[in-house]
Image 1 (cartoon, rainbow, N blue to C red):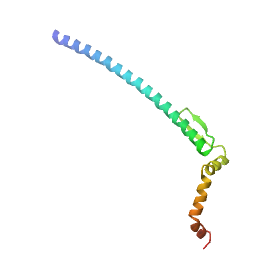
Image 2 (image 1 turned 30 degrees about the vertical axis):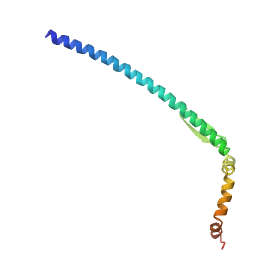
Image 3 (image 1 turned 180 degrees about the vertical axis):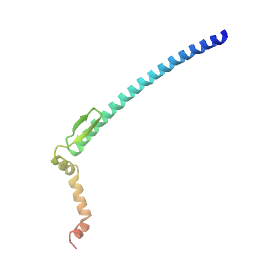
Image 4 (image 1 turned 135 degrees about the vertical axis):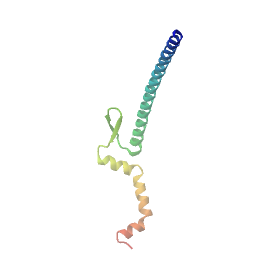
Length: 114
């Protein structure tokens, strides 16, 4: 009987040691997840800034962001004028003229031409 108690004590000691190692590994994983989350958030913010610069550059629309708890931002365009300038200014006029020339026959048929 004393040998069974000794074995039992030995097994309890091993379990306590293993439990401590498991707790250390869990703590390490939690720290890694927090670091990864910070990296993803920083990367997301950088991509958002680059996208806003691209929109401002290509369309000439000033981007104003409304922060909602730092997670999501919404694009706000302040006037219709900015939308029209953006669509026409970014090659829009050329596109409209090319489409008019390309589809001139269909356009004249729709509006009562020959």
